[in-house]
Amino acid sequence: MKSEALELVKEIVEAPSCFPALREKGEALLTASGSAGDSGADALMDEFLVELEKDVEPIEGAIAFFKSDMGLAKLGEHRDKMLAKSEKAQAEGEKICMCPACQKGVKLLEMMKK
Image 1 (cartoon, rainbow, N blue to C red):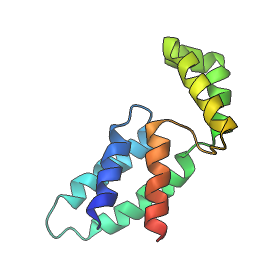
Image 2: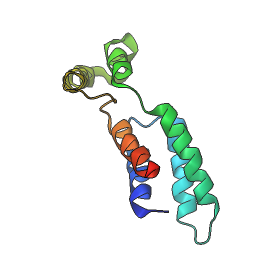
Image 3: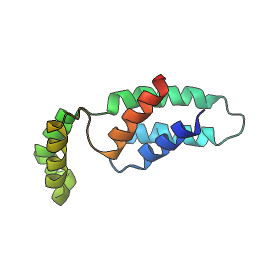
């Protein structure tokens, strides 16, 4: 398995915005990939990528979340900054949520399709 891909998995898992199910799959993958001779790492990477494809959020969804009461409750004082950043990015043509987990996730998905 490529070390670049595993580094991206690590960065996704460490992102505060990483969904719990994705974090769990990523941690299992990182543990397996660190074990010598573990052939299960490839299957775990496949599982991680399936979950990642479900979890990467379109920017419209992120903006709607930031505008919601739940977004305010979860993000507090950071909400307005994240909303402004996302709206600016969308105006510039960005299609994916600007959080680190989504941005790194898209990069990993593109890398693994090559």
